[in-house]
Length: 242
Image (cartoon, rainbow, N blue to C red; front, side, top):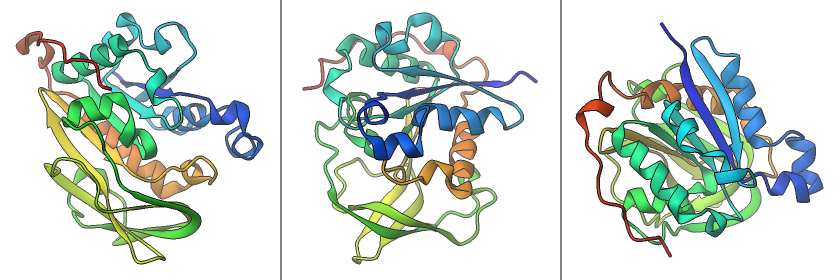
């Protein structure tokens, strides 16, 4: 059986400009994620970043990608509309997409969700987050207990302006009392989309075993079915997200 081919995309801005972030992710968040994915049998991961030509997401790269992981924060609007449309088309054809943390405001997530906001409440006080597993039988929750905790995180709270998920796997609780839909699954065309909330850049969240397990499970869940691309035609491009 061939490996699942993953591309981990990161805008890669914080790690170059913020010493605190650089200390946690010296090679970048994308490199950390790709490293633990490559240690998993049956997964082969490569990386792409904003400053590469075509943001590293050429037609050739995307055609060879089974699952794309997306991390963005401060440079959402710097992503070219034609690249967003290219990624959207591949999701509709069957490529999986995992959107992490502040990627909720990315052009690609908003385009696929049909919303121009993706707004939510937030507070960056380094609070404890408890991630409750509310669908323990879901493949993305495999290997987890009833919940897991992240010692310090940025708080996200409802109302989260997204369509109702097809499946809700996780709900987060924070010390301030807020709750948040933190593991949301969607189907778009022949592709699967998973939004996973944890991952603020100033905390070592992607070094935590439970978070890594969720992402690895998400990759396996998001892989398209056999023959999906051949049975789904091209669709009209969206207007650029503003």
